[in-house]
Amino acid sequence: MDAVWEWFAWLNEAYGIKLTIFYDDYDRRRFFNGLWHTVALSGICIVLSLLIGVVGAWLQGSHLTWTRRLVQGYIQCFRNTPPLVQLYFFYFGVSALLPTVETDWGGQAPLLDSFQWAVVSLSFFAGAFNVEIFRAGMEAVPRATVEAAEALGYTRLQIYRHVVLPLALRFCWPALTSNMVNLLKTTTLAYAIAVPELLYVSNQIWSDEFNVPEMMNVLLVVYLLLVGVLVWAMHRWERAMRVPGFGH
Image (cartoon, rainbow, N blue to C red; front, side):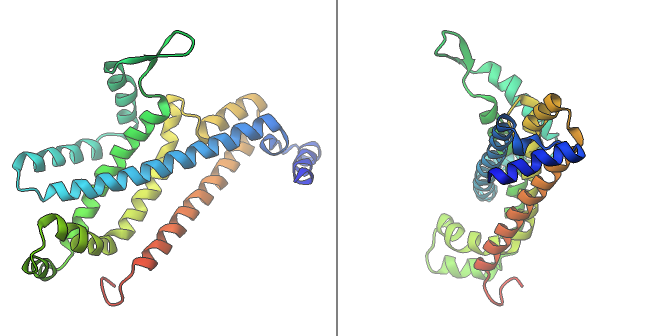
């Protein structure tokens, strides 16, 4: 591996291509720490947004009018406002209303840090789209299938868990994949509240090393790889869930 790092150092000396993230230990640690934060932020938000989508779609079918209205209000709010505004709202607005915690050095710190607020904000943002995606998938499930489950004595929750949701997933998976890809790309907005993700640390590196073109190209390649891996994983999962003759 040392030979690889030395080759990048030679590339800089010979051609002026300054990829310090490969041959400078400090920049390499910063960059891969940012990559880890991006992967962690994306993974957590994907899981939480899917849970929000599943629960929200279930609540949309509630017999209680106010429950349906609350879910619809949440959807309209988060789908029709910019995600950066939502991020600022949580980080600067909601955070200011919460109690602070005492730090080890005797000061006061917010209850949630910037990474945690990014998780909250981006999960709610993507979750609003997932609710509608799951709802559309549920509507595609044949009514006769639901009636058959009712005839067998299933409760509404049992029908949703064991019949409607598994079938709805097979209809809405392409839309879910698109939303998850969009969520991964949207994590770059966490830069605005100093979450040390890829864009944030890359900005620090090119400010120190004056290698903006190199870091911009690295960012492009890394995000292409991350999106490619996510799409590949989602497609593998979709194929594993496929039922021959159903929804295809």
